[in-house]
Length: 368
Ligand SMILES: Cc1ncc(COP(=O)(O)O)c(C=O)c1O
Image (cartoon, protein in one colour):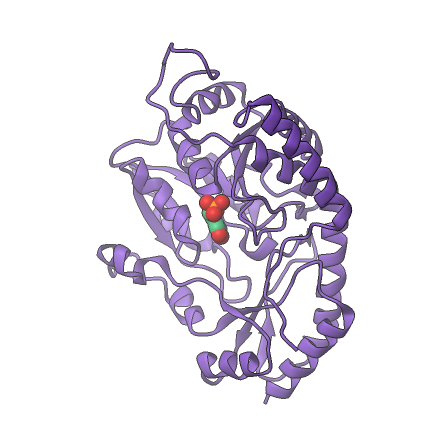
């Protein structure tokens, strides 16, 4: 048996609908930033109970212009978790600001609020909590710190479409939330991202920043140095279809992870990511930690059985391009330790119960 780690969910009926819509768009000639993008933004904002949504070409682009819209500039500091995807930190560098790496909690693997304040200086302007794997960071504590020090919050919700904390959606706690539609995400498209906010001023700025500094295509009145971060119509058609499917996608993901939880909770050498009872995760990833032994060997054994797995990110300052950020001051021991311990197992709505059972059995066989 070969079991894929992640796979987008497009039932045949959706594919037919998408094909028809793409045909119409191709005939119309309006292939980017058209009606489908507009409808998608409206639908997304409605679903997440926010005032504004700005569709962009990727979450990477979204994080970049979110920081710009908040006025982040040269030499400002932005606090990010050490364990994340590189785009979270890159967003600060793109603004000529400095990413400041904060350690993560050893059980939730997410930004540890108790380690944030010691990193705050006069230059600190924002925090980017990353909702890892669909879990949600401790937003009450993070918001309190942000308020006390007058910092903005941009939530990296690339993994957390539909996740809630005490009933509130991930992406709606800070000034801005950013989601990804990279094909392996909870909502997939042919790449893409979206920014949500309730702040009209930020919304207006984001609209300009994503479209080379102008409000709409065909205008030549540029009021900002913007970027070509537009979402195109084909991306929007796919993403809109995914939004319609989101309740079903979440239901399927949650059913699989419930089964995983029940079967994995008593393993001796493997610990599951800790998720608070207040969080209803959308489960982009099912993250586990190998307590003892060699993770590479463990993963290779699973691959021999046809089961794909992935490591759960590398501490950013340990990657080649970020080495200069590795200093004693910003040492993140939990994140570094987790690099050789955490991994994710197959999780997508298309997994059959036979496949889920097979994954469970093979992981149990590896546990000792
Ligand atoms: C935590 C996190 N943030 C941001 C991104 C960037 O998303 P995109 O590929 O849409 O630019 C990713 C992508 O995997 C991610 O995992």
